[in-house]
Amino acid sequence: MSDLARPRILVVDDEPQIHRFLAPALEAAGYTPLRALTGAEGLRLAAERAPRAVLLDLGLPDMDGKALLPRLRGFSAAPVIVLSARDREEEKVAALDAGADDYVEKPFALAELLARLRAALRRASGAEAPPEVIRAGPLEVDMPHRLARVDGAVLHLTPREWDLLAALARAGQGRVVTQRQLLAAVWGPAHVEDTQYLRVYIGQLRQKLGEAARLIRTEPGVGYRFGEAG
Image (cartoon, rainbow, N blue to C red):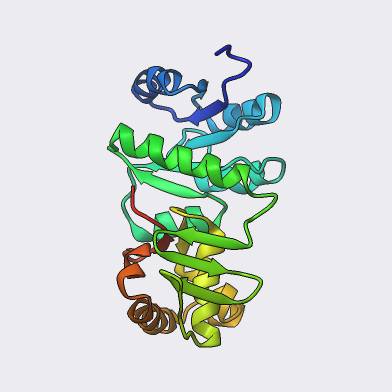
């Protein structure tokens, strides 16, 4: 495969060892890595080279990665995976709310990062025409008819339970959806701090999903992921 045919992946990180580690791995996986050591350089390359995805460190020498995200989102819809040594939940939530699609903590397993990258690219490639029926394991989420089925059997969900499941499913399999994002989508912007609503309704929804409850995975203190693990 020529470099022109390979999806470009922009890595914005000020640690040279990260680039030395990631560049051959990305090339072996069929991508063309682009290297940026600062936020300004990352924004320039993103504008000039139009990468398919961005791997972004938060601790950049010239700006915080969270400050870069809204500027990047001003001209690019490429999925962004945050690579961060910051393990505070507030940092993760802030990055996701600022426009990141996912995060992976440093130090990370290469296989996990590549899996997250593949998932982000799949979601991005289908973003223009989301499926009307979203399937994950034994679960079908039928958007037009507002129905959920497990192994073909219709679940009897309340309107709020349906809205919550639909919001998770629409976000895409494997993508982290923060508590604030879910609360705003389902209960409205006035309720983004009412996390107890989520705990109650996620619990009710999991009970009704039965064996498919594994498809709603908790990211402690951050939010939830929908879909099969891995």
